Amino acid sequence: MDFNLKIWRQKNAREKGHFETYKVSGIEEDTSFLEMLDILNEQLIMKGIDPVSFDHDCREGICGACSLYIDGRAHGPDDKVTTCQLFMRHFKNGATITVEPFRSAAFPVIKDLVVERKAFDKILQAGGFISVRTGSAQDANATLIPHDKAEESMDAAACVGCGACVATCRNGSAMLFVAARVSSLALLPQGRAEAARRAKAMVAKMDELGFGNCTNTRACEMECPKGISVAHIARLNREFLKAKFSD
Image: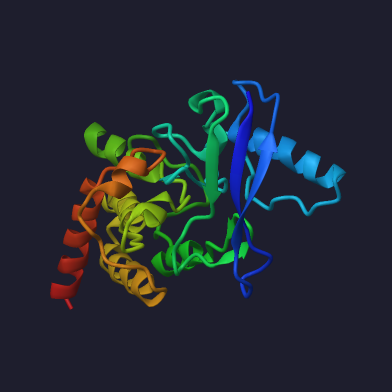
């Protein structure tokens, strides 16, 4: 398979970026998108051209580092996958593929397709920890949790923090990310002790870092590689309002 790659190139955060077009040939349909970029970079290096910088780590859909905006969609044209789980068989032979970094004021470009997502780390740090004993394993039945609540908490905890929700939202909102983190603990008794403080602190930090307001269009849910539901945003709003009224 042959492709024309229209890739965003930007030397650093201070300089203006632009699109460069490259051609790659002989790509197998079972090649992953990141492997295809590896092949492109090998060709560029052989020609003495600076390779395209892009983020990746686990390449198993776990870390969320491989965040690319491909043909107008976060992580590309397939559903509920990260970029490393996207394969070239999802594109037509000879297609022109546009590859950009995630666009958000809170995610400044470092170089080419790499963005700084430290803002998410700061939100998590604002949320803090939970007050439970960690010195020894607790009995499995010491704290009874309804099965449906445990499952819903695990669904929220599946968020990999890739930022697809932010890149997709026209307001650049991080509500789905924050909601998933708050909701995963709000559903469990272990997370109730700091629930009010956590909700207020994480929302305040999100606003401080320049993320926009929720648009209520559910675009974030549609593009989330883990299918995190916007129902968690409703829970975040309830937790935040309860915390504010209890002041």
